[in-house]
Image (cartoon, rainbow, N blue to C red; front, side):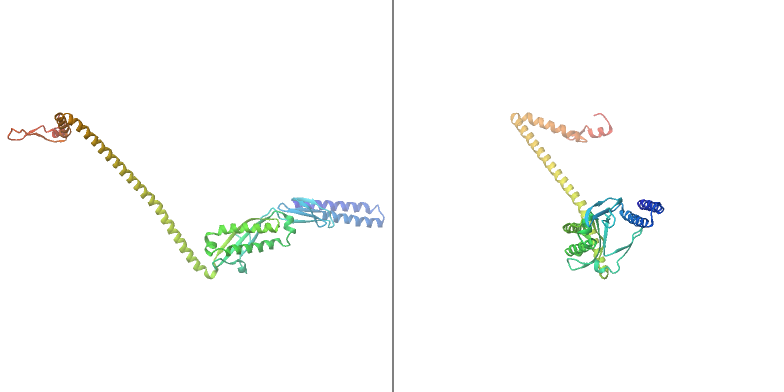
Length: 342
C-alpha cells in the first residue's frame, strides 16, 4: 500500500512538471525556455529525492547536515533534498537473531539448517577439560536506533563477538554434564544476563530478548560413549525415583501402624489401670463393710456370687449332706434351649 502511494505521488509530480514544461514552451523565448527547463528539472529531482518511506517495522533516523535531527515513524515523509537531510532505516519492530554453530538455509514450514565449516564456532571447552558441540541463538531488539547506527561501527559483529566470548566463559566454568544435561536453562539465563550487562556498558541501544541453546551434543568421535553413559545415568535416576516412591509409600504406612499400635497399647494400659483402681476401691469398700458386719457381708457376697454364677450353669445339682446320693435338680440351660419356661 505504501509502495503504491509512493508511485502515485511520484507520478503526480512528474505530470505537473510535464504540464509546466508544455505551458512555457510556447510562451517564452529559447534562452528562457532552456533556463526554465533546467530549473524545472532541478525541482523535479529535488521533489523525487525529498520523499521517503518508513516501513511498519522500521524507525527512520534523520540527519541534517550530518547531525542528528530526529526519528521518523512508519509512513511516507518528506526531507530536505540534495543531501541536506539523510535518512537511515533501522528495523526496531522486529526481533533480530544471530545464530552460532549452525545457519538457517531456508526458513519454511520445514526449516533446513547447515553446520558446514562451523566446527570452530561450535566446539567449546568445558571446565572439566571436555569438549562439547554447542549450538545457540541470540535474539535481540534495537531499543535506540541512533546508538545502534553510530556508537559502534559494526553492531551486529560486535554482538556476535561478545556473545561467543560470554558463552565460552560460562561453559568453560561448568562441567560437561551440566552443559549437556541438567543445567542448560540455567547457563542460558546466566549468559543472557551477562551479555546484556556488557552491551549496556557499550551503550549501543540493544536489548537482549533471549539466549537459547539450540542443540548441545558431544563431538561425533565420542558421541556413542557419551550416549551410553547418559543412558546409565538415566537408568540410575529412574531407580532412585522408584526407591523414593517405594519409601514414600511404605514408611508413612509403617509409621501409621506403629502409631496406631502405640495408641491401642496406651488405651489398654489406661483401661487396665482404671479397672484395677476400681477393683481396689471396691475391695476397700467391701472390707470396710465387712469389718462392720462380717456375717451379713459374707452372706451377701455369697448370694451375689450365686446370682452371677448360677445362670451360667447348664444343669444344677443340690448336694444334701445328710443324703446318700446326689439329686439332679432344675436343668435350667436345657429348658432355656428348648424354649421352656423355668
